[in-house]
Length: 446
Image 1 (spheres, one colour):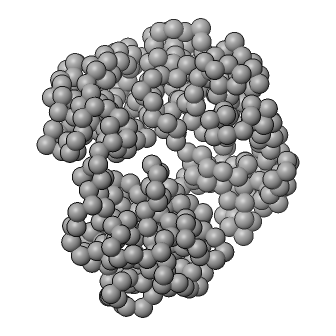
Image 2 (tube, one colour):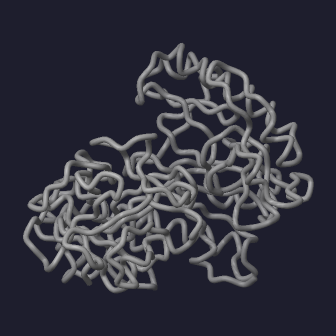
């Protein structure tokens, strides 16, 4: 398949703190304990080794930021490594989901499968860039085997530190992987055998018929120059009026999806959303980068409570804190955190806005157990929900389904509902715990 050079520059994303500084390796540390003991490093990966932060995609990262001592964290790393070895020996879904894990947590291995039928493997439970593993043997796809998959799940990510320039990296076939002529280059982080580092553009040749190493490295140099130009801008107006270097022209873009971490960068998309180069779209109060825009609580039309059928005193609400998950709260029609409407496209929109930005229900993944968060409303089927209450005018309680999987329903996370329970996706059961009604009856307003 022939793609443009700009499309060929892969951007690999990982859910980590959106930092403006490049990640750096700490090759002097060869054990988890030594890595975590060094305050200038402190993030450990089995295989790639020690880094100053979590930057490598699809590999578990171990540090003490989430709690626990270095000894406890490294013991968890050892257990995960052992479980990866246990699970990787299983080549079919049935054997995978019946294989017990080591360690105190118990459980079994999980079968990981993506939308691509040729990408399946057995591994520890959890989520990767492919999606989330399923440890339930009743959900095994027909004929699911890892031999058919030819999965690269067990492949190690290998740095090529001998190369300090893009040209040398891309010219070395020993640093390459399937589909590339040579290595994969990151501005600031160096040379690797494939694209594995989070939130940094990855440059490699051979993934498109019209891209040569010289062209790719020229693009890398241009992007590095534009990174410096844009990062110097600290407010939206200045950002969106700053011209980029190079032949393509255009201006820098303002990234404001996370109100407490706004910044100026090259146009495009990262794990914190897509930048906007249109100055007329600058959020109100988008001043210095990192400043949080105030929430807008003003009424925007006819909104309603989303009430749990099982207990009409409990409603869907926005959680406190930065993550903005959905939770259950005592119903209060005067609380803007609990008021919702449909936008005519199947998206469930909050009455409360953040920095003038409308936010919608957004499942983290379309899989069983995924939490539902609030994200900037955008054109994605992931934010589209359907149910007979919102679309058919019925006043009876009804389940709410994500459009992408009608076998999943919006439900509370625990066995019995209570204030503070997270709102998640579960397999539809037809029970009252998955039925929802709206204040005043009828449908969600549009």
